[in-house]
Every structure is written in C-alpha cells, then in structure tokens.
Image (cartoon, rainbow, N blue to C red):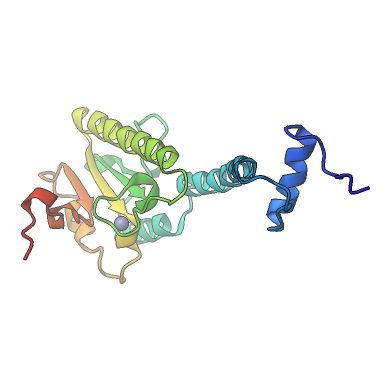
Length: 202
Ligand SMILES: [Zn+2]
C-alpha cells in the first residue's frame, strides 16, 4: 500500500521519532529540506542543552583541574585562603582575606579570554552563543568592579595560562602580597591585539 508509518507531522511522536533517527544519523528520505532543518534545530537544542549544562556544571565546579593547580601552589607557599566565598560578588574561586585578594580562575571559552585562541565562537547558532557570552562577560565585569570598589584586589587567572609549564605562575606569589597591584588579568593577550584600522597592509 506504501502507507507511511511515520507519525503525523508536528506531533510529539513525530519529533521523538525523528530525534531517535537523527541520533543515529538516519534521516527519512521523504522529509522535506525545510522540515528537516526545523527538526534538526529542535534536536540540536536538546543536545546542546545537555552539553551546555554539563559544561556549566564544569566551570563552577569547585575542583576543576586548573583551580586545583592554583590552590596547590598557594598552599605549598604557605598562603591561607578560603574557597568560593558566597557572600562576595561572583563567588571568587580563591579568597585570601589577609591580603584582601580575590582570585578567579576563568575558562577561556565561557568567560571570553581577550585575544585567546580558545575563545572561539561555535559555528552553529552564533546569535545564541554571542548573547550567552555577552552575559558572562558583563557579569564578570560587574563582579570585578564591585569587589574593587569595596577594597578588594582582583586577580583573574585564565585556564590557558595555568595549563602552561610548572613555574610559569611564580609571579603570583609576589603579586599577592603587593598591595599596589589592584587588578591583574593573566595571561594578558589584549596588548597584542591591533585594532583593524591600525593595521598596515603591505
Ligand atoms: Zn586563554
């Protein structure tokens, strides 16, 4: 009879069914291109929501690898600190009350490390990502400014720098007691960025 076994278009069953197929990378031939895109979009939404929440859980997790590296370094050198102090703006990852220093360990992708090669923009759903990134950056700036204006010093450590060779972070041990340094962002690539209108084309 050639009767389609597919559920009616637009129903929950159809979407569920197509998701199942999409996961296995099988697309029904009779699906029109537009409809295929629509369903694919819904499917990607579901996938990215899962991936996203896993990633979000990762960044604020208290025991991320880069953060552990920083904590170990400080602890070895006799610095005493508190972790994720909730009553401070942005819940700084490491707080050194004696030096009035807050340290944030930032993932380059989520927090948009300026000039960093890890601060990429995913090729699909660019607007969605851009909005998300803008929110993160704004939140970070707001937290940092609040801390600075209430007398805290702020040190931002980016994950790409922490992943570097052991010993590359020894500057931190001198910076923490140095109360002339109110705000440090490391590594800082933004000095290397040349605005496009200042570029000389040869
Ligand atoms: Zn980076």
